[in-house]
Length: 195
Image 1 (cartoon, rainbow, N blue to C red):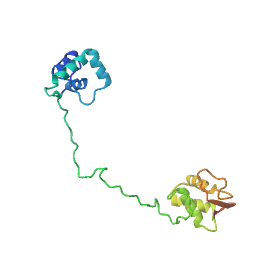
Image 2: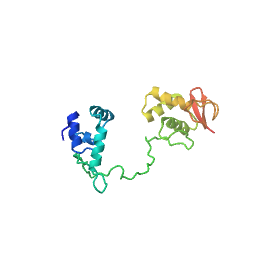
Image 3: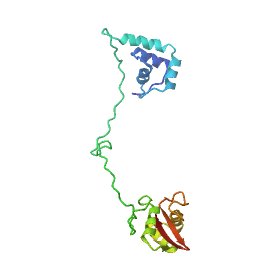
Image 4: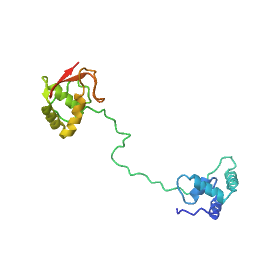
């Protein structure tokens, strides 16, 4: 159905056809969906006595048994979605996620590693823990850089957090560094000390 301009004559026709509400007038004029407040206000301004006329239509539409009857409003075309063979998200079962390592590392995860699995901080911790007698700074940077694929600058960012734990397992450290370990420093040689 084609949309009709909202005018006094068109509103009159809709009322004569038996419209019982402003929403029904709106739909009889060829619109679909809900009527906006500004459009309803416009209809009321065009025809100030509209509410009385709609109430009269409601009284006429009531049959002898006392049940109201709806006027014939042209139905909007219904578009059914195409059915596919794929199940919808609501019908698919949610499977629990299993742990899958984000990268394969030649350094096993240490039992006391406080960092998230797969994180670069965790990898730096594991490299330090793997070298029981400690490791030199340059060698540590190169090993972590090769494992993560990062450049030296960004590798140092991650490493500085892990190496910030000094003096004791709960001593001062970077705010992202976890408790439970500290790093013993002898010039450029680092040894992981666990509590």
